[in-house]
Length: 173
Length: 279
Image (tube, rainbow over all chains, first blue to last red; front, side):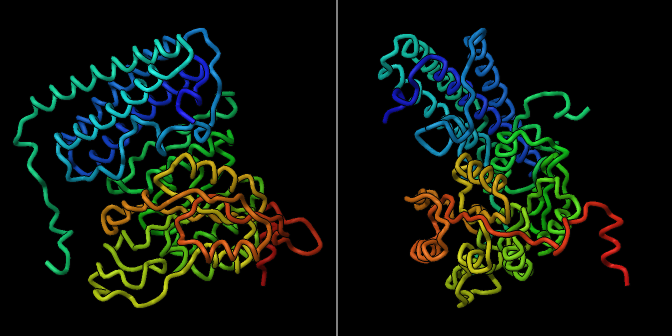
């Protein structure tokens, strides 16, 4: 069953899209919090900005949904391709020593998965209004990817050095 | 005014406190926290009607990260604390959380007796197969050949517990396994565990990125159980033993009698409970 089969109408598509963006924001906030706690303020600030952008996008989609009665779905009713919504960053890819470039790489991977999600629906959905809105959102995700790429290029290389935790030296070393 | 009385739909964020977890980035316990709060939100349980009791260890910090009643208790003693609370306040939904070391080593005796008493508790064991807080020692669920601890450089050589088998043999009436890499699936299991009347045991495989980073591979091995829950203990034990411990879902669910004092309903007042302990 493809994503288009799982998303038979515009209301369901909007619920999926809002959830995708909100969960991306929540995950970025979660990562920002944990970087704060582990005294990694530069990366915390990066994740905080990313959370802000995801929230803005979620609000845009909510505006699209204004006046519509959207279906209520339990978290486990969403049939994502993976275990979580596509723009939620992989928590296991994070560590307290990560630098800004690594945080941005994580964010770009998230945006790429979000693009793939919308792009697939835009190409496969038999519902014209779903396909059109998915194409619009895919274009926005592509734009976000480009912005992150620029951000990455502007990042000061000095903050991108590999970091090391002496507590984690293996006994054999 | 409490949120519940304000007639506001509770989201998972309402069940989180403002305290930022100090878990390592990448820790599976974040996903368990999200799963618990999502399950509570789905069930729309009023904040003041839920208590989360925990033991000691990284995962046991979870009580502080929720906004329901919480008690960050004594090492290995979360279950007796929770049992006492449930006896006194049977109106509360009581969750219990802790790690594999807390629950199966120092708390192992309490675990088996909690299973057989079958009080209406939901016990979430966040199993990362290591003592993380004390910097990476082997726990009762660590494989015997794990050599990455300075305490056991050649492995423990001791076979590990199968928590689900132990729970079944001890009389638990609900046994399930979830995975931090599938927080929504875990939330569904926890919601079912909360709704179960009796002692519900949920083994939550939770990756420790610091001391067991190799467990990042779990996401390649974990899969859903091919069958639904059984109420047949013989069938359940066959499934548990035949499995490599990576199948997730509700393994066993059965209605069993709960511990009650003979002759009357359980007491609900402090005075009645105190009278039980008079010398």
